[in-house]
Image 1 (spheres, rainbow, N blue to C red):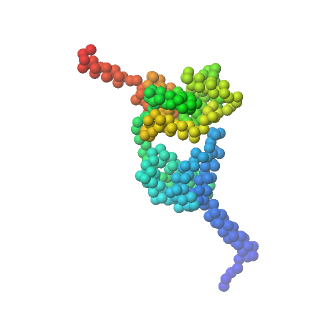
Image 2: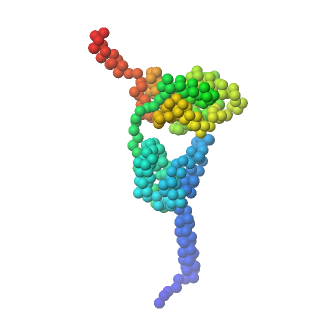
Image 3: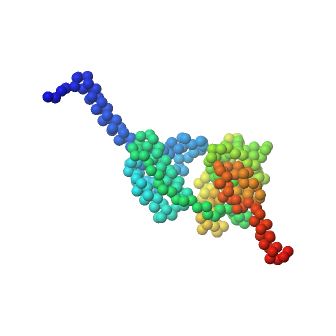
Length: 319
């Protein structure tokens, strides 16, 4: 004999069953595909950025790389350890991307999935793609002869303003993003100082203008009537890159893969330490988060090794 639930209990049971079905459908609907999850993650990154000039377009290339491999409509729960390993192989073996590019792509892929998982849009907790080991390698910096060739080319081709920006990066050691975000109200011509308020490490720092940097900045200020305007607003980052590659080819360095814009920052670091500036001061100037980052350039510090060479010469020559 089948017993019947009291009318009130039966009604509550039916409501519970329906609400459970709706909740299940809702959970299924919130499981995002890669393209939608990536768009949400980029929007989040831009909104959460401490930099007022954060640009979502800088993520475009990384998104295209993920879509090309996994497919834009793949469910996040279908991105497995195996498929990520295949992605790693494509990046390293087939495309031969550097460790920094591969590792950054892996970080973005993991953070995007983690962002979705925390918001109930991915059921399975994400796993991280393996990374490539970073090698210290050679520190590429601009020699005095190369700097002369570069600046001469900028002058001859009527791109003096690009040459001025190269001087600025060499003498300040600023990261590219710091230079393009710099505003006139970050400059103090009375003390000759430049303050970086928004940096990669989220730690403000101040550096002194060299004579030629001061000349460049004073000239740009005279051309501007807005105190809070971007200092290098007349040069877009994209155009700076394009002209840089033209210059590289013109002076015969187009085959040198290490001759990139970031080597201007390396140049400042090597010149500071080569001039005898102590490593702690160089660390503060460059805005490094740890002394280990600055020690990468330590072999440029004058040392007793020079005295050792002199001692060997004395033994050989007797003088």
